[in-house]
Image (cartoon, rainbow, N blue to C red; front, side, top):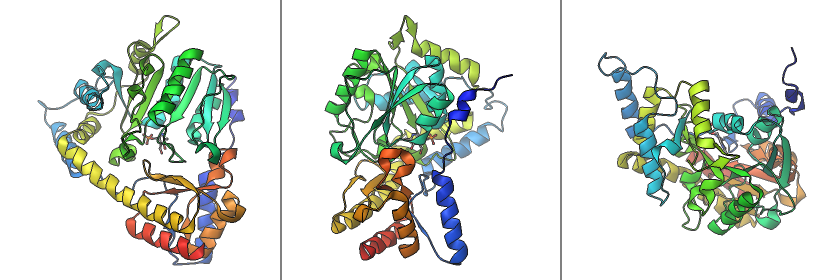
Length: 392
Ligand code: PLP
């Protein structure tokens, strides 16, 4: 038996392991010290009331014979699929409910979706990148073309006509940089994908954080995207579902390659490889899209945005270059005085007990940069910002 030898090409991900080791070592030498954790990519606020009530009700449904639900449809509860399609309609994107697939979250989908493409494909990944893109494609045996981004293009690389690929990952708002593509820039990516016959995998995990009108929430707001893109969404950061697990994926019905319909292929994939998302979780997810739910999730997002404003104010005061923060829950800053990412990490930990994420962990071009998350508590974020200003 020969295992998937592509796994031997994976590099160990030292990023979060190293952060954990370094903070553990620091705390063992500085007992009872409070750390200001600005590195976490997990939310800190609980689920909103509308979701909690829907979850409770769904649990009660499962207790009674006449309201009990067994297996759910593999591609999602038709009511939830319809609700999500309507959510897109509010933004001017027409989708049918069959184009929306309910999932257990974006991470699962980002890897699983590669089933649609067969093996040995060429994949374009803009870096710094969410690490799962690279690892899922190494496991699949795909060839990865790394497109480095930098300060000079605001961490928003544009297509290079001399390169061709089968699959293009785009994450906007971006993790880790917080950078966002505008309509014109995304149109250029869609036109390019069309020209080279590639499929865009658009990761919209942070769309709910967009506040500027000129930033698209969905790739399907762009002309021509329905014939070259798949959108992968998550309710994790939108509504605090990191531990509850639900997301959705949009595959247009007219996404066809070599006469094969990718929407129909995904139906076949889901009905083979999943038995759907649980009834209870889908009822909780549906509550997010009610008027009350939308209002309540916005209250939580507002808290994270205040954290962002607080950190951005500190960096502005210090005259430090950064991007993100405005339409995204991450702030990506240049390390001061030419420091390396890990050097700056150690410096902040030792001097002001602030923990962030070294940019080098998201690809080589992230060296010299640092990511702050805005998902921490407002008290800790305020204190961390104050300490940053005093230190630098
Ligand atoms: N995509 C990006 C860019 C992310 O940052 C994350 C989580 O941090 C995910 C996808 C995964 O989301 P989920 O919790 O739905 O698996």
